[in-house]
Image (cartoon, rainbow, N blue to C red; front, side):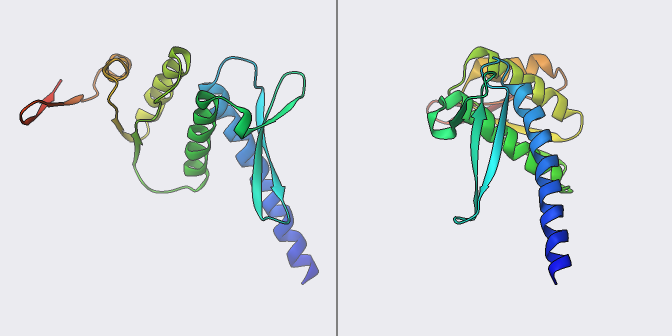
Length: 160
């Protein structure tokens, strides 16, 4: 029984290392400022969950609650995409609902590039109220269908 427990511990550690590496690749593709060089997660044994923290170039650690909304959103997107990837789901699509509500232009641009990459593997559905973001996606992925819903007296759907 002790050997089986050791195998489980080693397997969990290896999976966490793979997930951490892929997660940081994904995060750094979205967040390009250099003030965060990686995000780590430590298991809180007593509480049974992972505590995430950002690491600066100087090695300082900051809990997620100390980060900006844009930094936290980049972490959340990277985590969701990494978990989807390592879970080996057979779903051929990814849905984003207002994926970047309060981020700056650089993160928005990086997200557009990420969606462009994902679009070569999956059907992508993005719901957004930001017309400039929708236009940037359409420009990056020319064969994408842009459905515009306008609300006046009655809703109208237009394909661009």
